Image (cartoon, rainbow, N blue to C red; front, side, top):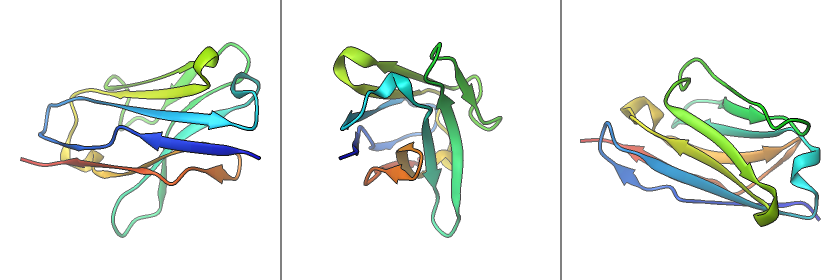
Length: 112
């Protein structure tokens, strides 16, 4: 059974940093394309970043490029999203995703 559990969301001021974690179970993480997506109030899901199964090369949405870094630790079955220089427009519930499966999300709020 595929499970994904996110954590690390918090309230932070603009310019701050957070690291989100996603612990996965039920599959071998580095065999699959994994995503981070987010949803802001009143908006649809927005793709943030992906890391492919082979090679582990991440790609990013233009809105977060240069500020966010996606990585994974296969030994810990954990995926990360390091978020630096956070902006109010980054406020959202962040989800890790494998195909159609998604965790419960973790709230990130960026405000003064």
